[in-house]
Length: 290
Image (cartoon, rainbow, N blue to C red):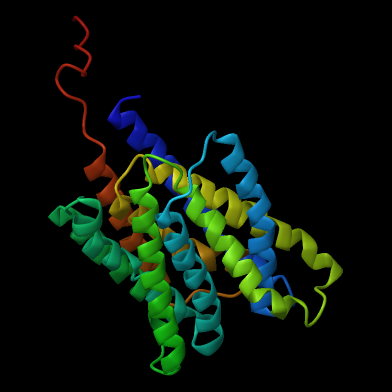
């Protein structure tokens, strides 16, 4: 597989990942249960799916990065859920998606993947779009919630960098460890009450599809593209998330949502078109005879 084909497949994997991640809002809202209990059950449901995927992938060797990345993974999930409870959902999403900044800062030193100016341009454009998308819902209240959301962004960025550093082995091991930590750590909240009977279907989708399958695709993409590319493309997720909530539940996005979404999509297009090279003269078919 040549590099261009690999990057195109990685792009498709990342876009699919973003779509799967984006359904978390509508699925979580459909479950009338403690948010940390939901986090526990979905991680514990994701774990066996990922374990089977790891076993099918062939010989597996555990590395320190799997465990450090797993801690970062669980920290990102738990702190984001807590932040959503302690501040506005808009604040939590916007501050979590500061993750590309940390990936950019760590890429050169940890991964030896220096960033091109267009990378920073795409990150800045995407972050501006996310801020604009949620502009009329952001507040200055909820200091500790905002701090937790920033910590979630840092954890998400560190996790992505460490998964990329495992590109020659099995990046998915990080998600395997992380889901086990998050599931066991939040499990006491699931013991306080039983979920409604109708909640098990959305919980299964949250665990197996929205976490398990999504991170399997994300790990596969990280084997083919740089960390900054992998973290920039899924930034369309916070734009899609409220779209599904609006379509299925009726919560309307704010007035600034449309221009914000435009900037995010523009950033993704900028990053993807800059990554995939145009055909060379040798690859371009000759014009037909006339």
